[in-house]
Amino acid sequence: MTNTAGVPVKTVTFRHEAELVVLGLASAGIDAWLVDHHLVSADPLISNAIGGIKVHVREDDEARAREVLAELERPPAEDVCLACGAPMPEGEPRCAACGWSYLTGG
Ligand SMILES: [Zn+2]
Image 1 (cartoon, rainbow, N blue to C red):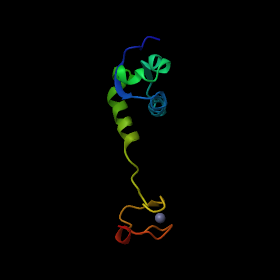
Image 2: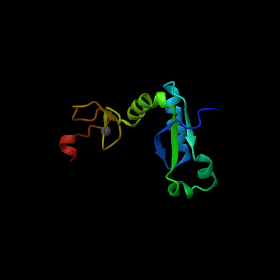
Image 3: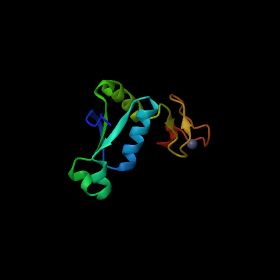
């Protein structure tokens, strides 16, 4: 393993968050790895003290990795019904599932 340095593109508190970030990057064809996760695994409380778990990528991949991360973190395009949670198309004021409406629901 020669790519131990790289550049940090994301810092998270918990190991499972870090794994999700790595998986997301991997699915886009970007190699990513965790830094400081051994310390965190030993004592979760240490995570805050050392600034969290850092997800690193190769320098060449940094720009693309940030794009992928932005995409992953973007909220879903569709709104959801505040009453039942069913997806509601943008601009549609009434929920097709339960009839709740932005207009009357508050
Ligand atoms: Zn609804």
